[in-house]
Image (cartoon, rainbow, N blue to C red):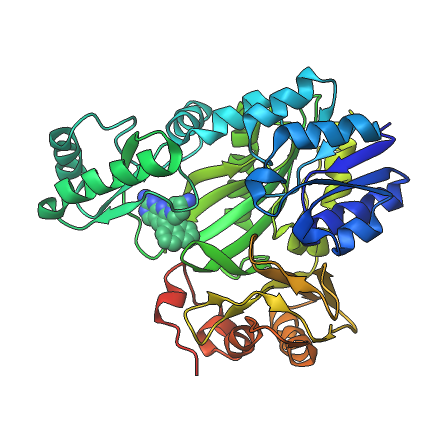
Length: 445
Ligand code: MV4
């Protein structure tokens, strides 16, 4: 039904969307900033339009520039990728108002999940477990102290407009609460122009396990199992895998049902992710919903044998999904290869890739937009690409990953490859014994 899709993004995800469009016989329009003139997404799309200067606010976040590119190329839909405008309700609404299909949920669905207190209230009504807490905005320090005393310390303060860790404060004792309250409120106000904060019981050493869902415009929702994203550093994921080494068939059934209830509660349409915190007793709690395709969608593609971008486009075209849930048939692991120095606090290392050899062979997938001679601009994220391996067992997927990482040659910039090589040989990682705290104690050798 779509003849032409404009991809309002850059890098590997723009290329990823172009690849599926090609297979579906849909024409593509790339947009690019002047810093991305020589990018592969520009070369591989059927058409390309420059939308402004390097700064994201002048290009990939500039709605009038993007709408002008839609207009002059006559595209009938926009794929937002991840980041940039992917979870911007105003942008989704502008697309709808101009008769351009936003390939994602409606503005209303984005808004309902964007405000974390509203999302939590929706989940409670739907019967999805949430972390006990204030149940709404905190009005004063004394109110916060009362709730914390009743719940017991430690507690965590979070921004209602937040997500992904910004504006969060863990509080271990009442003596720390006032300062944390004021800091969290100020940080939330500065980051989101909304200083509303709420409180939850702090779950110690949780795992981050998320469920991939898909919903169509006929009210059918299904899940495609979980991804374990516990290997993170300062809220940046570095490794994701499916299935989770912590998962059991019973827990998957319960979390899958909860995730479908969560998406169903807002009549969710598109692919999306329900993030859960899972404690050591396998209690799980709704954390937030990501109303976009995610970086780590590839591990789910590999274990369920489904092209999630194709599913997302088909849903946007008004096609029905089967309604069947999917269990992992394989084990897949993804390592994020970033231009960062793991020996120097993961400091960004933009610049020219002088030498490049990407790995291949059985069970190896590389999703990357770089080539020898490519310059990683300093304006955007530092991702060089994603290395994904798939095998019948977790041990084999790890061994294939180590082999593929050893073949990956990138010169000119520092990369996270040495970190991943060390991780793949780490006994605790190999045994599956890790949680979101794991990287706090990890040292590069
Ligand atoms: C929590 C938590 C413990 N208890 N909430 C981090 C990002 C944001 N989505 C919520 N986050 C957390 N919320 C309660 N009640 C611990 C975290 C957290 C975390 C969560 C997932 C993955 C990595 C994390 C790293 C630090 C803290």
